[in-house]
View (cartoon, rainbow over the protein chains, first blue to last red):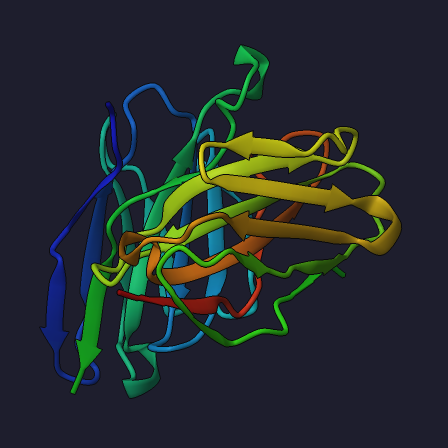
Length: 118
Length: 117
């Protein structure tokens, strides 16, 4: 069964450093998302991406964050200058074209990348 | 603005007990989707079910069932004869709009279910 993959599973970085979190969405999906979960808290929406541009972003997704689909398979989240409060689990998700019917437009999540900022 | 409330934070049951996880949502849209996701100790988010606002039919899948009631804005999840493998954090989520695609999910805070042998 196709699945979303994310690398690395755990990233440790120093405050102020740039990090890039990588995701490979399910291959025929068109919509891509990033969420984060601070330890012990709820999952929060960061950004959605479709047709090579951001569709929606939350207040959390400030100028320090950016997303990119550099090729036909990867979807990345970059944090330019990490802060301590960026420490969280970051989840990538993808969903299909809703015109395909059924539940194909359900968001399926990757296993997450745990980011630790020291 | 959309909001999901999971008032229960932690529930502990003994194997074979039935348990219901509550979810109450708020939205101004007439068209929306409701979801349940499971987060086992390994951390990934596993999709369980989705319902659209036009479909109030209850769903049963093996030991799991979901009760959607628009009148009370609730979408509750019941596990019958619970097992240790059901131990996880369960999240209820809501998305607004005509489709689930390209719509952000708003999650509740999650309910930690512990099933003891």
